[in-house]
Image (cartoon, rainbow, N blue to C red; front, side, top):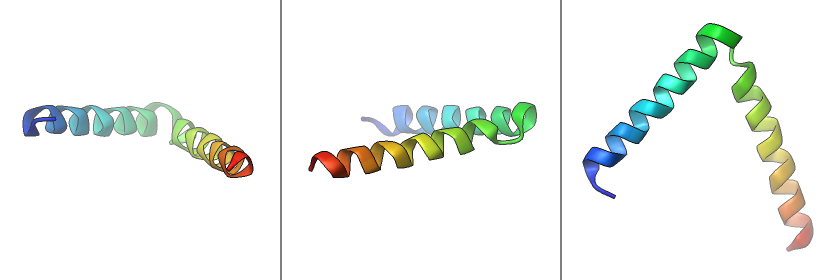
Length: 47
């Protein structure tokens, strides 16, 4: 991955977080964090 692609991805992620904060009050990030926690627990069970 080149630096240019990495910077564009970083900018898109920040834009998505900013839009989530503006329109939903970070509810989307909280939801994704909870689902990530569930996924980690599920994967640890199968390990």
